[in-house]
Length: 212
Ligand code: CTP
Image (cartoon, rainbow, N blue to C red; front, side, top):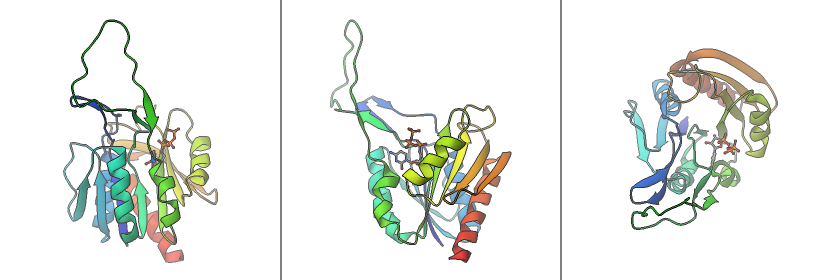
């Protein structure tokens, strides 16, 4: 299969020296790209700013902002049989970006934010027979919100995780996830290495494409 993966955070510039971002390390998405390449698939990885080596056999496309990630996904989605959106895409960006460093003034500072485009929703019309997989990072029981997102975003499956657990989510090598399919079937994988969870995601994809 041709598999398009996104990983890492995005950065939304405030001025030439400051940005808004999040705690995503990119490890889960890079593990998915590595597992897909190891299983013999062709892999393109759209990566936000992360400190990780490109997995062997993976074609990497570096981006910084949510808008750059949207443009890269839109460009490459036609190539893929499966899209796996593991990136933690910023939901907001500064409404205007200063081309000079913003100087501090007395009193509070107000930063106006505007919404970024939802990448999965923007590529919904291009889905056709492609398999779309999302991730849902929630604090607390992730299942209700992730179940809502699988439908709202038109996904075949979502990988839900509770990022408030010390053994799951950001900056750790392990994760504990629930796969929620569009039909409602669920599979829980308790604390496991991100590499093992990545391999399970690729096996799920392969089982789907065999059924098709
Ligand atoms: N996602 C996306 N484009 C965005 C934000 C998120 O494609 N602008 C994708 C993520 O890559 C992930 C899925 O949508 O696969 C769910 O992301 P999440 O941040 O959990 O969902 P949001 O829709 O941003 O919901 P909220 O932040 O309100 O929980």
